[in-house]
Length: 470
Image (tube, rainbow, N blue to C red; front, side):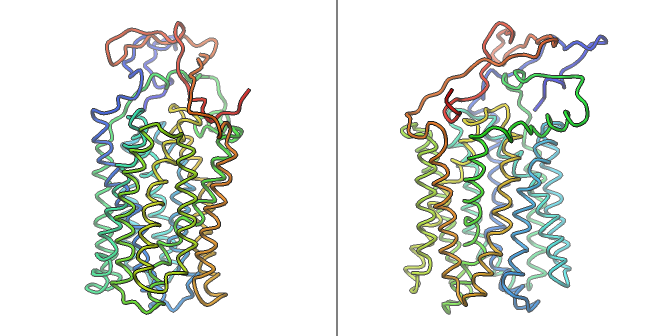
């Protein structure tokens, strides 16, 4: 992504009058290669996170620690991945998504490699939690934002297709990790996971930069001081964008309960005296259901029969209900059915979360808004699993843990209802953006070959579906 200040300049400091841009996301072309890259990236990040419950019991037994202490490994990783997302966003804005994602892939693999030599939980906190977590932050946000920038009409479907990697990897990785642990012990298994994670570098190389017309609509101030430059780089004015902040609160609540099954569902099954492979198979089946949910949700959203915010509330509520029903799974078939429901509904809500963001802030701010969203929702990712583990240690089982997880998601759905114009029908408008005075607007050559100048045309900045009414 090239920013306006990155355009070629003359000796007098004026902006070069020519730049090739796309008037809107191309909805295809190389975008499908970006989707393919995001598919493997989602598999090698979230698929690993979701299947890490296999290592949970190994760490509890090897280090002789309480459940809530071991839960911090994945919680720190998830929290760092989300909290450091603005760094990935800012670096992508400055240098492009490709080098940032490739660097993140290397760091994530390095963290898993170092974790295989751990002698205490602190080593795992630092290697998997901090190092791999930071690598994931550099991978996830630029990848998802790149998919959103390449698609408009098919955005939700493309995002859902990219995230099907999570479902497929969840199906494959849980039994695979259990097999690796049984064959090579947990240290050898982590070495294999490290080798898999290094493939994120290759995926990052597939992301090709794309310049959109809306990128040039944002004002440029060449006389900013350091604080103003940081504010612009991280797009901190979004913190006063109240629809965005309410959306952040809702996603934070959702995130608090969302990952709990991927840490404790296997342990719940083991406590019900099912063997290791039966417990791991629950996550595999949930992964297949997750895949189906993402595809159906993407197709349904792109049909435009319902507003995205309405679809998101529905999927979030159903996910919360399915989590609250986990304690009722006293028999394996019932627990399997609940796992399928949870996998389907939780998978369905994910692409909608990312697709609704451009409707709130505009596609030109997708990198920064996604980074800030993931940073602030990291509070939920950090506290969710340890809180669940603490409830288990206090009560002796996971009943309260899953009830609390469901309650968090239902609370998030209630906050989504407060978004502006929630009860209105689907509609949007695209106001013009003002080009900052004193900066000569550049004439651009659109991808179609058409000449255009922003001072003579309205430049679409954002959808108004979810903005505060005047």
